[in-house]
Image (cartoon, rainbow over all chains, first blue to last red; front, side):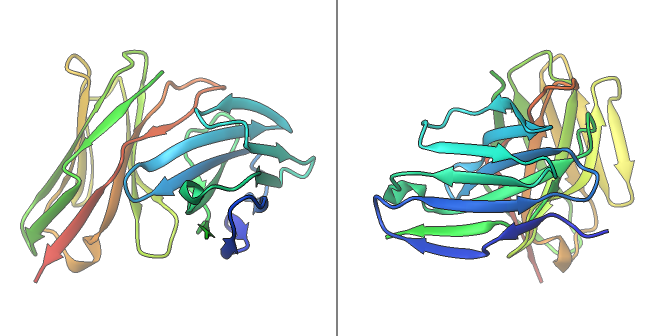
Length: 112
Length: 113
């Protein structure tokens, strides 16, 4: 069974641009969560989608948004990029109500 | 909402010695406490978890203890090996269909030769 796939692996953007990150969960997993990882703050929860509906949201500004498609694939969008948005963005999937998260390798975003 | 504090942020131990990482949580309703290990260039991977109805759980060289009264839990790694070098994250959540899993800031563990 293939693991969680995130694309692209690396991304370089400039301030003010927007970016879209993609995540394909493990087959059969209907829940997808997104986390931002930075050296000083660890793993910070962005949001979680289940069956195309956002069921949890973290404390990030509205510039961060996401969506989930009928095949459970998810995208995350960040608009009007700021230097502080530079981070590793991790996607994790889980099966229904199971708490176990399976993470992808992440997308490393650099904002210049 | 839930807040998870993790200490220390960096830990160096001699190969063969034991390592202990500690976490505290704020929400007494939390009842699920996983630990994840992140190796360089990879996403975090679950290594062990514990539920609130259990005080201790062991898996080979790894063990986790939970003190619900004090709201803290710990990861213990015995007979450390070079491959134990990684970043370790603790987390907490309330086991429910719509819960979210909140992580600590991580501990970078160095195993010294």
